[in-house]
Length: 584
Image 1 (cartoon, rainbow, N blue to C red):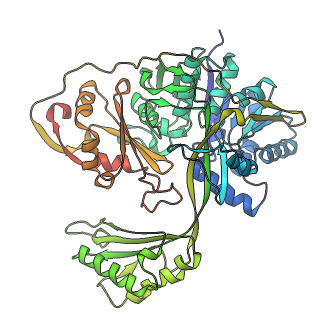
Image 2: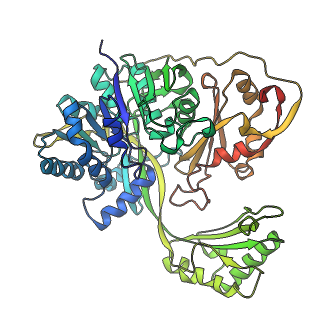
Image 3: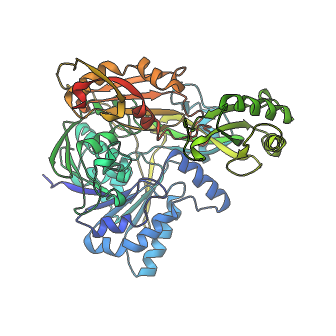
């Protein structure tokens, strides 16, 4: 049986800390260096880059990092696996090869593609091969900007088996860049469901970089070294269990709390569907084995769906926003006057736009001690296919109000401006049989690796949670976050909000208290929306999926927090009646 393989992360998103690759390669022993550069929004950003510079739809920052660490990686036998290839993994591989040549190095570089469906969209739509991920309705023709299937780990495994030192992919799942090295190292078969599920779980924990080591953690005040948080690694064993850790001497911490928090990030129900395995998050068990070392074990897997998820970005039209600051007294009256006067000054009415929304953001405080504490913001947003309608014709109207309406009028975010294009995210699914992976090693032949996973019949039993009495007795009005942590984020146009307890008694109370109805009461913005509630007792956690909160996705959302990153912290700030027994 092979020893555990240590897979490290150096990037959680396109734009993460540039020095992280060097920190992970030089800061301690690792076997693989991985990173996640892609998100649904990133694919849209890369499409715009590609439109300006054909062939440049990849993360150039990864190439820069390779220039810094490639020699050390080859010397130490560290292999690199990344999805930084984006829309142009072949060109990214060539760019890395140019860097290697300049450095006098000769790594074997491979790339995995086949995820890009754009050249095939007309045929796929005509053959009714693409269906909406949630509704099952056929995807219709539109102005598509990107269309990429989420590939699994087996193309990466094939590249590593062919001796690749660096593997660059297009749109794989975030966890695939971790699962691939583990499957290669341990020689797993495609139906080693539990082992694969364990590796996917490890990949899910470390793929967002420092979010596993204290970053974005609710109880950050308890964590040392947060001014320079270290990046994580996972020691993945042959059975799929893993130890999550970080290099010694780096900031942050790895604890049951930080790992639980990241496990709740951007998930739905207990079944975590992927192209290689369906991972059952209701079977995960955590154990703090020593400081900064958390063991994940007991994880069970099931066969994956016969379809792959597809990330589609299409042109949504144009959007514009105007923001007015409302200061001091009579905020509601000031907002009403500005809104009515603005639309009177405009050549259009709200109904003339595909979408028009108004948000009053009450950031003002009672008895404000500073000018800034006295200010609320009124935001008026419009979307429409007509660029002219959302441009100066819309935003110029605010100028008519500056001297003619409310006292203390001032704007924020600049003066009148033109509309800007935006993309709309649309999740779809496609049969895995129609999307083979294409694995190319530079200088060698390209070959296909099937995305089809053999079916199986597996029975999974969720892991039981704590069996304790619900605390009773006197209660006190306190913020929910005094005891409970959270993690929230975007899932297309939906948002997920995970809430976790740090003791068995706190979990027993949370499970009974935080119903869907109570959540909607505490977060009134969600009251009219479909909200799914999922319990994960073994993790002492709840996860809520809020449908439509982010409208047509991150790039189109008119919310102040378009990615719902702060949704959980809003919930934690709400004051509730909590048993005093939990406060001690």
